[in-house]
Length: 152
Image 1 (tube, rainbow, N blue to C red):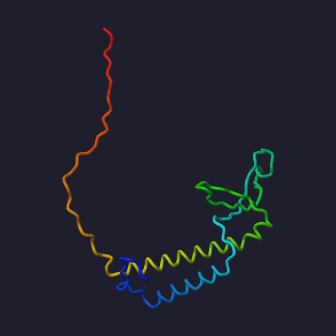
Image 2: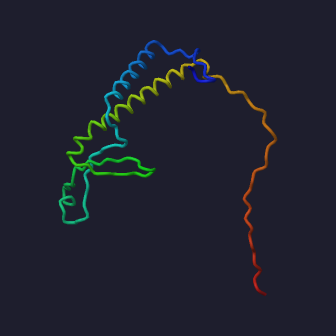
Image 3: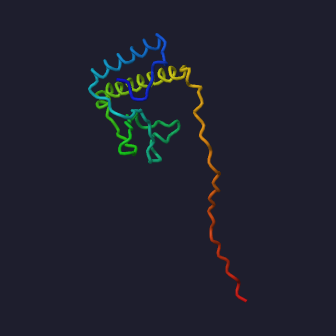
């Protein structure tokens, strides 16, 4: 059942666009059927320097510590970071790959949708103009300035 107020009969994707959308939908369906986990966030390998001035990471040339596998994500609106061991990265790596591929497919589907909407012949139609009412005066923020007279 189409959404109320939505008329898609005049928007016609090309056969190639329809085929690509079907292929993306099929891959998303297959991925979702096979996906067990897809954690949010990203994993990056980081090299760090410590605070000891005589350490090898401050030598010339520097040899930083690491690599450390850093998993970063948002948790309750704040950035949460966790260092993963090599063993954890090996276990969770396919999960992060699942998340990345699903996001890529969604982005590709969005891009295809934008291309179809951009080719819609109705896109150049201007919205109906409304009658402008009387101009309102601008609000000004007046500060009270206290001037004290100097003693005589």
